Image (cartoon, rainbow, N blue to C red; front, side, top):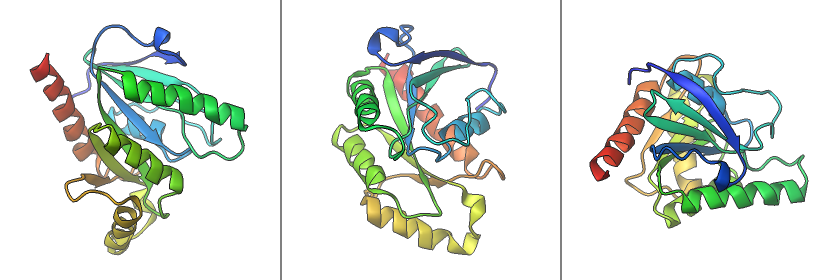
Length: 200
């Protein structure tokens, strides 16, 4: 994937604010502070396009990033952050579900988990939800540089079993530090965009 241009377009909380260009969209889902913004920046080779924060729960809107004028990355609010109110959580859940369930140009979701830890119940619920609605999904296990390669299979097994991943479910180990997994994520995104073009 050759990145020629990338720009932040809008932060949205309702479908009235979504871009109307009709371009394909790839959403990123994951718990708070799992590295969604960092993954976007690494995949498109930009340091600070997507806003990263050390403070969990900072992303409270759907953030749309236009890539190459051809498709959008959509950074969803992180789920599972304990320090926001129940009302805020319900509000996030409502517009996340509205987006995932009703957005015709959504062509795939990159579901991000932390390879170092067992998936949370929220991770399991999100994967079940994506599978139920038959949304093409790539599971990405971030922070691969934080464990030894000899531990990879043990941690992947843990993720697969806890989330009950289907046998054909793609899972990629990723690191923003080493760049591991970047080509695999780029290829998956390109395949989803090409499938959109074929359907158009």
